[in-house]
Length: 168
Image (cartoon, rainbow, N blue to C red):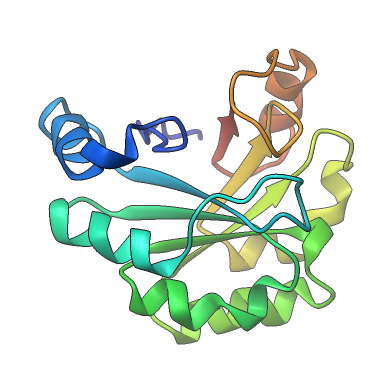
């Protein structure tokens, strides 16, 4: 069974109006606010860190869905949880020990998510499906907003055996 949740991303938000824009999304019925965290290493772009997550946490009451597109995400899980992240998503491609990272997310009291890049086969997460609350099947190559949607992602998300979301 797949559950659909609306989680608008703040990736292209006007940072000068970020609090207003996330409040507008919440008022419009968003289930979560999605924050794309990029480090310039796992992906070529740098976005923002725990301070922006904390600012968004102060602005809305809905869950914050933190998408960690960063190298060694396990080193930063506590900082993003402490900043107000409710769901922490890690890329299987960035975790040497994905099972350990998912366990740490749970220990911190957050919901755990695992992400798959378009070129990573779903079998890469089979062993940890029982440990996650959500699977994010990337519908673009991580790093930039506005990319062309990869149609094959729809079939990949249906085949994961878990609730899945496609990220564009």
